[in-house]
Length: 344
Image (cartoon, rainbow, N blue to C red; front, side):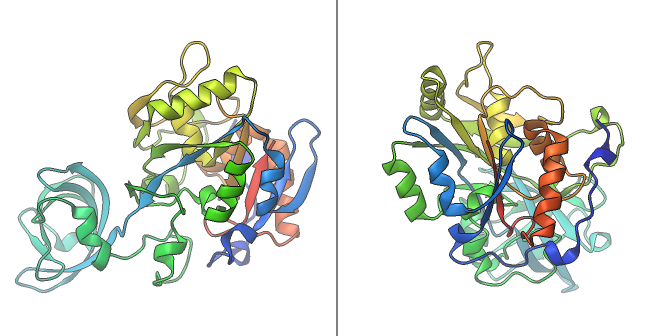
């Protein structure tokens, strides 16, 4: 497969700037791999496709308020500091991106308020820096009040207070993502209750989505593309429940490409999931033999993105491009705050 195989025209008007409310009333396109049929539903209908004994695997990562604005000591120059990942919790050392980068050198201190500041201790890339925060303990907690929601670059507006809740799954518990696992944004507590009541186990995993999820693929030959590494965890209990479902010939419904990548990273030789934690740079594109994922819940993704490639590997590129064309024709809303797709 080549990069250009995943090209389609996405009008700006199709990109959702805000989510629908309530969140489980978004549209749901159901794509059947076997019959090649494409149907229009509402997200709450998803429960009709699940049976007792199935499992629903979700990504419990939590988006933190990663975008900070501070002032450089002495000059008071305004600096944006975008937190990427925690490198050392004990020493409060983080990877960040700064803007404007030309003003930020090793040794500079950036003050966010009278309690929180950081010192630049290293350069990583042209805009990348390693910084040490003065905040002993939990930096996540410290930035929660003063940071801004890191909305995706294609949502062309400033973050609003409502985004703090909207750009977060209702089951998010583990701080660490700078982008939401968007397929999960459609679930409400009520819908999850309904799913559990039907006898479907909800199993959590974690994959902290980084900024790399928005990075364009710049090579035509996909074998030469390198994914950014992201931290993930598969708890022992989750692995056990998924394996039990596989053994009893039930379906593993996977919510989102991030959950899918975490699970497909942790496959044993006999096609089961192992408890695991670490970093993954797994890049899934056609052709790929999925070992764990039986049904995939996802959103509508950017042209030529690694997310679209994973979904195409699961459903077949021709079928997905056909579904996307139908979605555009029928005014589906695209990307993070957009509508959902269920691939059977």
